[in-house]
Image (cartoon, rainbow, N blue to C red; front, side):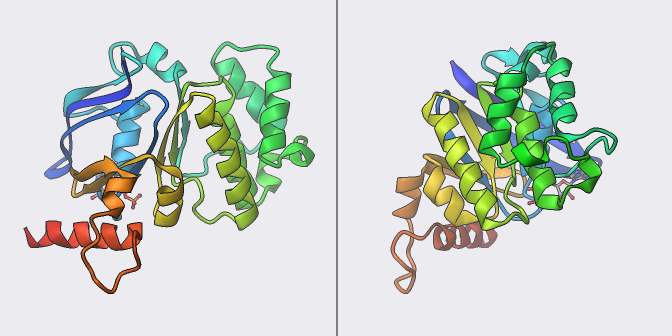
Length: 247
Ligand SMILES: Nc1ncnc2c1ncn2[C@@H]1O[C@H](COP(=O)(O)OP(=O)(O)OP(=O)(O)O)[C@@H](O)[C@H]1O
């Protein structure tokens, strides 16, 4: 069974075709990268996966559960770290995480909440009010929130945008550990060196279509520019995006 399956998925926003017949299966245990320039459709794809936005055509399944017709089961299997920082400013960090656990019907989650906070460097911020946290700290809480119900599939939409080196390193260490333990990870990022290091397979999106889908190792072999550094994903990305513009 695939962890995530997108089948004939399209999304229109009025006349704009933001996703154009996406077919993609992400297998259990993969560390999968979803790359593309601004406006390619990455967030739209994740919003449909999260049940926040309805597809115009097609369907999406999470571990076999349709995100529309079987929403509760699908949502429970997913941990989503959204791009935008949205919080209830009246809760502190621990309360935010307890509240999120309650949303999934989980009580007595303190040991796991403590462990997540420890790995994300949030322990000393546990009693701080959300509105008093810096942007980077808020992003750590977003990651923690996505993990409270121990979802087997974790989707991170640009989790390292605007965060410092220390968090990046601790975040990737923790996420890689979760991947080694069997969690499926899907990552969107504009930091291509992160995708290169972490992802075993990558899809590149442009104008709502998948223009490349391969293992990271195979993608790195595609570089044609003789002046490019050997095996640099940024060069491969630029090359694929230009080929698509030319065609
Ligand atoms: N709610 C909306 N209404 C109308 N158009 C939208 C809406 N959301 C996204 N779009 C458009 O759909 C296209 C895809 O946007 P999306 O946010 O999915 O891209 P993205 O790949 O996530 O981009 P970025 O890297 O900038 O986050 C863009 O042209 C965007 O302007």
